[in-house]
Length: 90
Length: 221
Image 1 (cartoon, chains in turn cyan, yellow):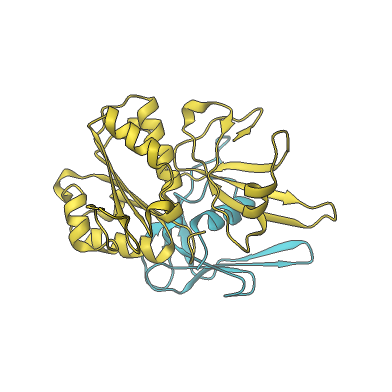
Image 2: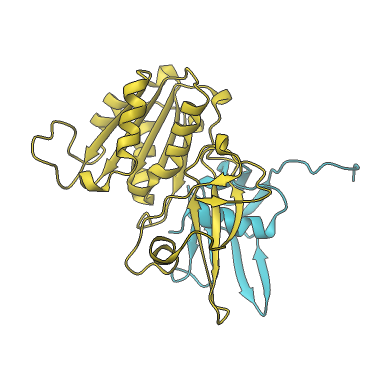
């Protein structure tokens, strides 16, 4: 299993705000916990990287690099709660 | 120790990503916890354990010279951090190199002269593996509200009267404030160590939201 730091680094490449303290709800088991408590699996355990729910081990997020791009799948994320970016209302 | 011009400061417990680029363009990147407290300003200290097959650690330990430049990204981490204003009591539990971010918290607390009671339970294989040993003793000698405890799990020096087994439920029950005191707990080290300690603390009645964990991966390096 990967480290909390590796997960934080990967998330910082995708998301604008700091993610390790962001609560996330697992689609499969309904557990809500912060991103830092979820389990990261990286090569060679998986091609690319998979962030799995710390409770039920289903895949929350999948990261695959291809041709200079990063494909992010969010199959197991029901919701993510992040600090609201400052600025105008949507 | 790196001088980082423009460093905006950090919180104890955060880490940086270090990236090395070889002349042929090959890049390697690793994460290292910041060992220095925020009070050190634009100087960032990392404590690096040299792994025999470590691409980055062997460079940082063997080859880096004063004046060398490296690429550093951070500070990273909004969860596993402690500031004196967060209060306590503060319980730090480290396995091996997991003590590094905890030491940033110890140094921050000392620099801020904060009267927050704090304890460190530090598990290593043998006495020579203890990082910051002299500094921990010095801080404890000057401050009776800080109590470090070592447990040497594989080998002990002659005459050792301290703990000499892996962290278990009995040890945590002795070493950690009772759940009723609501200590802020930080656990860092190899993933199996961290998960085992966190599970036991929850069984002992500590609220999961007061237990923060930083996993260093399967081998803790």
